[in-house]
Image (cartoon, rainbow, N blue to C red; front, side, top):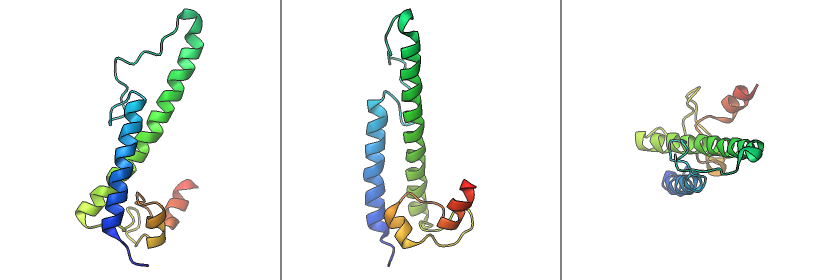
Length: 116
């Protein structure tokens, strides 16, 4: 299967747009920083609930920011002409993997090794 870089770039740009939108809905900038005007509300009696909600939002923001970083790295690879090359070992990332997850910057072997 041949690598379709044009389609991958289109998919990545759409995914990036969706991630930025999700961050904005959570009250965060692309940088992952929460806006200063975000009010989790509540009184002192609700402090535990407010802390729990803030922690949950921060976790979601962190996850989305990580995904956005992956997408940006893949787009940078496209611009540099290195899309489809593993960041770790330099081998080719399989076209099937890139079709399934266009933001991949590691081949399957390196990704599996990083989990252990």
